[in-house]
Image 1 (spheres, rainbow, N blue to C red):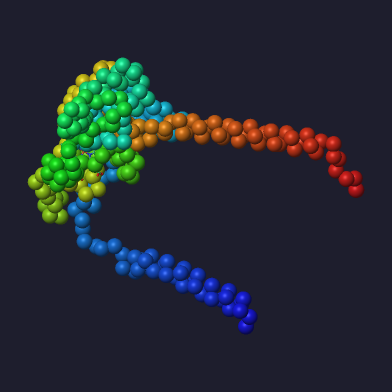
Image 2: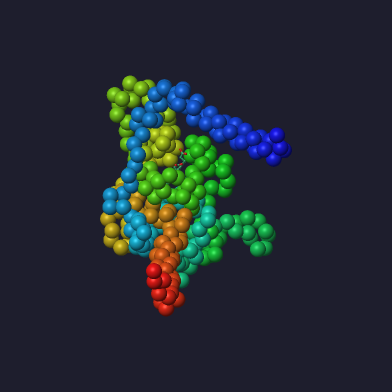
Length: 285
Ligand code: HEC
């Protein structure tokens, strides 16, 4: 047998073993299935669909609703920022939501950020400037955990990218609080430990975040929109979609432009093909 043939057979054998090996976990799962014990979370968990009517930015022709993003920013500022940071966003980014330069300056100054005393070099606080990022409500992770029953409130800058379902997931968490069906809870031996809160849209159904939106009118919107709980949840989840991907709408618009350009280029190519071959007649038989 030639060396070359031997090499090919050897390679095929290795590839075959790798293919079989890659099937092992699947075969195992098929044979033994998932564990059968009932997880209370799977009994009570309900998938959240997001706000009725969806979002303005949905779909290929979606746009930002700037009034909504400004309302969402207000909800973040007045409610969520007590526990959650937004460390990848700086105040000057707010200009993209339609705030004027003066308004951005005023917004920045309304936040307190960590600073350094220029005389002594000691750490102090100072009013924010447009180039500062949103400050963290806690000095460090230990303080954050200690204040929240050992659960650290995650930074919200990218949360709509980090969770399956994005804005709809955030909306669902904010509107998913309540009580489990008591009879069913008894049957499966489910309880919510002290310090946690039942939330049917949180995968583990007990969440360490106390319900943040509890009252209609918890914030007062400058544009007169009624601040119901679903409204606030929709607005803040839209705002967090913008923080995670400010270029979402621009990206889609670029997509349309590219498609248009490709169609144009195709038409051009077709016409030049016609032009080039125009003089050629098919051969007569
Ligand atoms: C009192 C503090 C507090 C406030 C106020 C608060 N949160 Fe939270 N949040 C938490 C904690 C603690 C967690 C971690 C929960 C856990 O892991 O069980 C959390 C988790 C989350 C999560 C992630 C859930 C996940 O899948 O891991 C989201 C999203 C969230 N909060 C959004 C918000 C929004 C939006 C607001 C404002 C409307 C808000 N939170 C207000 C404390 C807070």
